[in-house]
Image (cartoon, rainbow, N blue to C red; front, top):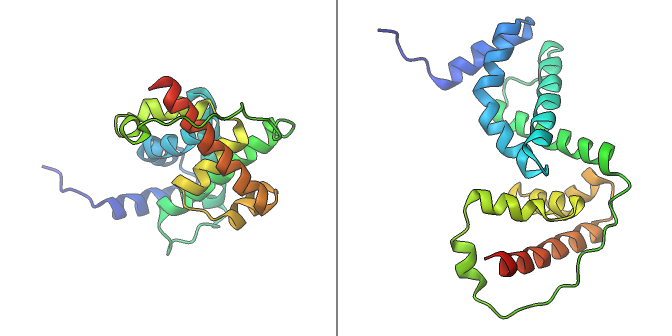
Length: 185
């Protein structure tokens, strides 16, 4: 019977081999973090295909950085990977949607409903469908602020927008989500 290897030792071994450019270990690292990475990428994309594209671009950056010894082994790998995934998603947005960043949202009508009950019954798939209906910049700001915990100043720097714009996009995203929840649930 094979002895069980701790997660940290496994990741350390994978990183050492990736640093040498060992493709087999790059594939193992990719497979090990695929689910984690795809979950993050999916938050910043409209489709699974787009998320996989962001994920693959991210891992190319990861492998390049590891081989160039730009990864600080004293930091948790997952946190470093998460930062690369988010930055790659933002780069993807800038590259593909730079002319669509001033979309108007539908007129928001505040309806008196018990939205809390609707939210309690939502599944992950339902939430992703709702987020997919937001304009790109609104979704990115919502994810960075509400899910990843960035503040408006950090978001403004990441997206090259004014801090006040970040607040506006977040407010509009939340308003649109309220309408969508009422409409769909």
